[in-house]
Length: 454
Image: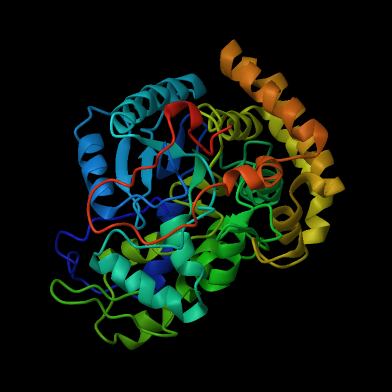
């Protein structure tokens, strides 16, 4: 959830109403901006936990103090707070992989240092394994989002308040065909996306119990529903397919300058342009509508790949960033990845991601699925060969190679480590409501901390 837009400002700016035809033209124009791939970015979401006893929730007061401290840091990345108190760092657009890595690494070092002074840390895991979702932010956007998502069950609250991810942003690609063409990259993102889900699955627990899915985070996105969290059909030209999807997706809310926002039920943006009720939609409403759609691949001028669970370890996030950059921006690696995942498309069928058999198998089984394991092995080999061509340092290449050896080559993912460590992770008192004030403290010494990082 990288689009945590501020609730401030004039909700009725750009007051001129837009027609259905204008919406389609605008979406086509703003969501796929083609050209040679030059820019890369990453958005890192983190759960905030106590270093001493992560099984106990951090109080809202302690979270608020930590957020204030982190906001005071002179970071290069944009810092936002997610609805459940998660922290997100969004890198500025980078001209190279190493520029992105160096910028985010420095920012993470600074954030971790100030959090550690208060006994807090960043947890790289796709879904909180201990705590029920609790909303930390109470703003009109999240009030409306909660009301809307509650209509399809509890998955929305888990997504908002208990999940974390690594989101890699790559350029849309060139206008012409070929490995770097925008149509090829759009297709590749949706088929390779399942391999990335499986290779980086890291959320097998919910409420202290295994869910039976390597990526419970991905399961929650599926349960939210295709209209809100699904992708468009891959049939036809990408711009036309995405514009159609935007128009036919349900409106989450109608914003107001004062008072609670209206949350219509079953109203698509196409129907809103035709009916003009409760008021005619404007360009600002379209821009906002685009931020309320959460497909696994979201075109925002560039392509935002949203399917990867947050990763363990201080440098775990480097691996999906580096692998994805190599497979999309190096022509040779992109061609290899395309050939590796092409046989998987048959399993996806005509159903859009993530609501198709391929994506479900990836989230449930990880690399225990033989075909996904084979494709992941080919893709990691291609990425490792390409990374030096992209200027990656030995540290980055070695980190990716170590991940390949630890997980991909063995048909495992980080979720398998968490399942192996289940008794250790659940050691300690059961999760409870936090005290009314003051930090949540444990009795263990620093030597006995139960950090969920590996």
